[in-house]
Image (cartoon, rainbow, N blue to C red; front, side):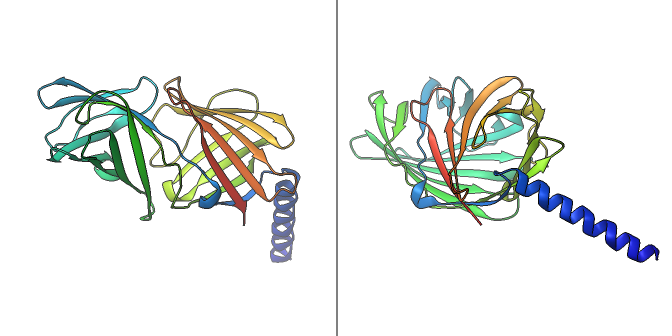
Length: 259
């Protein structure tokens, strides 16, 4: 009898969960469609001393590094290293707790006005993704110091997001590859992210614009990191995230297909 009751309760819980998921149109498993997505980027490099540089990858977040190949303290509990492999070639590596997260291989063109970045991200689950950026110089005259804006926007890797109901009216955005979860209600309050690779002080907030549109904001220690407009297609099969980052003139467009 006890076993039957348990099985009945389990079935009711699964049914309730299923109905709850259906009730929110955003809930489901989503996979990035690289052919429809576009990523843009801007970065700044400034010489601040002998073989020493200030790097800005977003907004006014400055990281100062001596280009000697050593791991040095950087933003959000990470380390950053820059290795000068040749006058026209740099290797940039970011680590968290000793684990390599990003490797960027930078190469200057002969005229010094174009920079290519073979960018590889290493996820906590052992997978990796690669992007190939091409930047044009908008400030500066020679070498790597200057302001660089990407002119290629094609995405050549993919990842998945799982969106599940959370508490009464909220949602959880789960990123399996990076072992990161953002759970929040739609009341505009800041909710902490969770997962072994989420830095302390990382929060997200959101509100519903309408039934098929969400507006989300990510912060680090109260400082704006990005805003995301998340739109569901009328047929519920496509999810589009327009990600705006401070200091960048164009947003990133990520298009996901429902699985």
